[in-house]
Image (cartoon, rainbow, N blue to C red; front, side, top):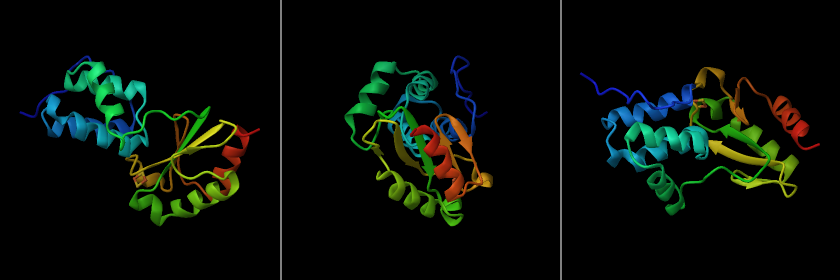
Length: 165
Ligand code: FES
């Protein structure tokens, strides 16, 4: 029988979490899967934020302090960025084929920031993810916590412009 997720895990309910959940399941919800699980989470979310770190801690039955310890120790993990708003553009294969590269380029040009950076006024942080698990919506991005798909350069820029006023 496949291992079951601990009942208490307050799993965020979307496709991104399903990818993280699958990584934990693959390792039988064992604590040694922490680094790999955080990798999967970062690839799916673009960065690691508290609700996800909490859910991973519960899923693998490790103290939250240990999860934070690992997430802050390794510099390939990034915690939630400083911007007032976050835009995470998926640059996974399906999204890339459908124009994610053009979207990133347009954002970089318009707002002067690259992936991993925040605008000087602190309004927008731009990040990338490897796949949200919503490839049918390609190209997709997450604006704060809302997943949006079938984006164009225009629709993406207009959403970001609303944040920067
Ligand atoms: S490649 Fe973008 S959601 Fe899967």
